[in-house]
Length: 127
Image (cartoon, rainbow, N blue to C red; front, top):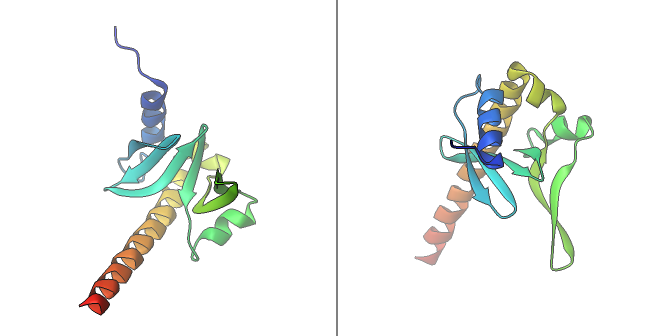
């Protein structure tokens, strides 16, 4: 008999949570997991908490609800990433989950496009 590990169970749960958004996958990262859709990371799981990608266009949505930014300590300094705790309703309501996932996925796509543009510009200036 095969028993699922906690990450597999959580992945199954998140697949259900985001069923109206689309298929997701989890990849082990540091002490948690990245949450991916179409190869793009739009969320992360750390210490059994789901965080979603934020940027200038959607971070106020998280802050307005008093949701905290993902932070970790490196070399004695607190580092904040552009991910915020997902509202509790995301785990309870598939429509809400799809809405928040779409916003965070769009933020991740904008971040990826911005990174690609800066890499192209850097290469252009090096030649």
